[in-house]
Length: 446
Ligand SMILES: [Zn+2]
Image 1 (spheres, rainbow, N blue to C red):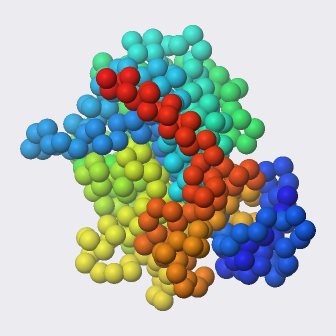
Image 2: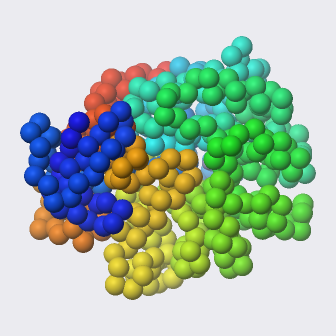
């Protein structure tokens, strides 16, 4: 199959009159300066699909349910209580229905692969399902229904706080021991679609002891993800437990490198930012969720200046939008530093700089190649050039317009592994998926 674009963003930069040849879901050839071949589909502007490195699919069903002030110090921890109550009802079918909506929305906004940080493993009463990968199967079902690429990250979770403290009743659906988790990982592997990637995710230093960390990370050669330094209370508890801050502890004790993605990594000292950047690991930033939860601001200027790798994630799925995440990274810096255009080299486009960084970091974090290039999956997004946000645009402002000024409707088509999943900004299954989601939420919240 051939797609032809008037303009396309290639690894070498913007190119005109580009033919992209696709075979078996991958890009086989990219030719610039060509006329469209007979039968080639013609489109205006192509950019590569992005990786969403951090999602908890079921949390899409809680979006907007925890926006009332409960107590004067309302923070992440009170949100977590509401999340635990929501979990008391969810069946695997519910997880599949809610996650399918989240994944359709991801595709509609330009995310073509998701890293599902999947920790909801057990039945409502905390017992193992007969099939330990029952809920992983629900995630796979949502990925197959929507066509999004899946990097599944089964989560190991065993304790309520630093020092191996016993888990709380609200955490019963997450818990495993090491042997049970190894079985769960293998049962999950058996369910994966052809181009899925399997990693593992020790939940956090709160939930996993150092001994367990080493055992869990030995279970796969795939990507390794962990939540780190999201809240200041977590940093203080880690200092009290070990004398080191969470990212400092991970760098000192785990040989953090390119296989690792540290989710959030919000609270870093300057020295931690420099060391994390030099490690080659990815910082998985989720600035929309981090803003929603009042977590804090990642020190992006210093980290990027030190050559650090970043990617974006939609995490709680409170509002799924790839452009919004990229914009929030830059805007959080502007608000805290009271300057403009902070995260690009002088004279360069901020949107383009952040897009390229998130594209590369997303691929690294999710264990896949990215970009419109031979060998990469044919994960391609076309922009809707009839959208007023692109009026009079030249290539060098396209990504800034999309990221900073795009609004809904800026994306036209999305191909995932060469299959057209989004047309005119709508996922091909969006009506059925939304209807199923509505019925599920009405029952759960009724
Ligand atoms: Zn998370």
